[in-house]
Length: 60
Image 1 (cartoon, rainbow, N blue to C red):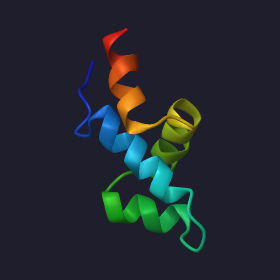
Image 2: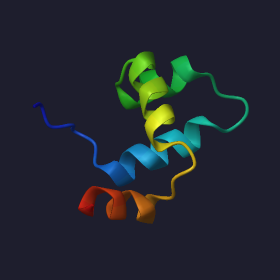
Image 3: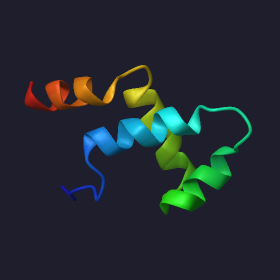
């Protein structure tokens, strides 16, 4: 399986920032060099998770 260039903590940070008002998903995806569908997939997987909790999930 291909390894992501982003760590789980970075993904959670990107997802939390993308949920802010005033910026579109398209703009966030372009800023971080990912596809819009990837961002939506990350939101589904990591929505509501804090960065420190992401590290705990990885250990499980």
